[in-house]
Length: 169
Image (cartoon, rainbow, N blue to C red):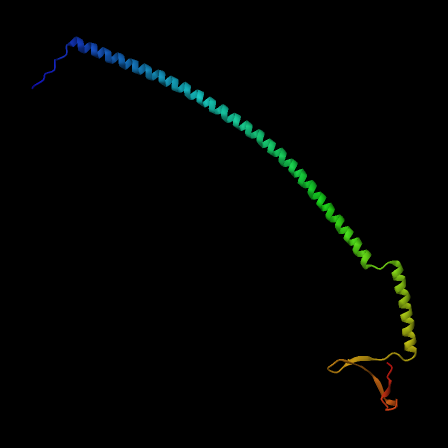
């Protein structure tokens, strides 16, 4: 089976070529219009993106200003709180110093009473020295017992002769 194709006629070929050319012109025109629409769309999208970016940056700037204002308020509050704590610490320190002075330093009446007792003790020491009460006392021996310097050449006293004269300095 041998199939044969009929040979197209020159008129039919011309019509076919004309149709192809017409379709090609339509496709080129459509592509040109699509290109223009694409450029127009790109321009519009670019403008929209620029507008959206500008709006976002303006909003970001406004929010940054609000945060800055809040931080300045917080800074003032912290500064005030720190000043109050410093003042309270200084006041507490001064109060403790005054209290310590009141507790540790004797009053004028106590100082006068101590001076009077000192005068009495000084008088007692003078009288003791007048009676020969200036003796040299030390700790002696391994046990640190109290001992006194005596005159060995002097007389002895007591029933068993166990008292000696103290040597005055």
